[in-house]
Length: 222
Image 1 (cartoon, rainbow, N blue to C red):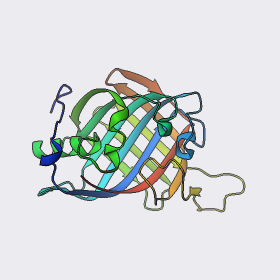
Image 2 (image 1 turned 90 degrees about the vertical axis):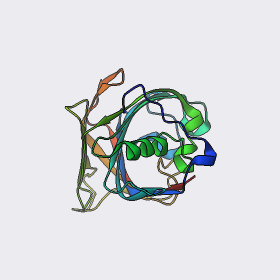
Image 3 (image 1 turned 135 degrees about the vertical axis):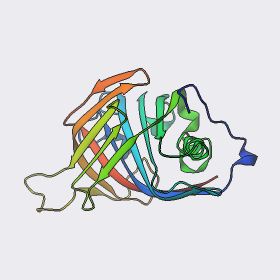
Image 4 (image 1 turned 30 degrees about the horizontal axis):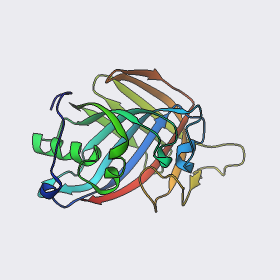
């Protein structure tokens, strides 16, 4: 799949699908990212990296288990009030076969419905879809998480947020977040970025010491 490919699926042809796993982002907002609280980004503009590891998943008869997906995106305004327009690029796991990569692109690009489909009307510019090697590491105790795409077009990492009054080993978490990026019912674990570099799809930025958070996700569709 190349950067110019654009997955298209008629709603009548979309099979039943279900993916569960872990998601995290790293963006330019100060800690904590206001988007998770249904507010506009810190400086009115969000530049972010989103990474998904699928622990279990299928798209019709296709198995999506253990694949990774990364989105790099930028938008202005409050995404939750519907006035933001998203510019984005999508990396799908090169270890997947062509049918599986197409399925991943439809699900995470919003065209297969479900929770991601709710954001599809806000995508003003899909800059492309690329197959790439994607390495995601998430500590079992959520002490740290990281992602690397290809030869370094995306490099991002974060350590769990802590401070003078946080008990050792405890995680800073939020339940019932009003703007949970993965949907309702999941717990956010907050972090601070130690790396956040993007050089791809026409984006170029580097943010360190900014907001990051981890969510489990559980999506199905169409």
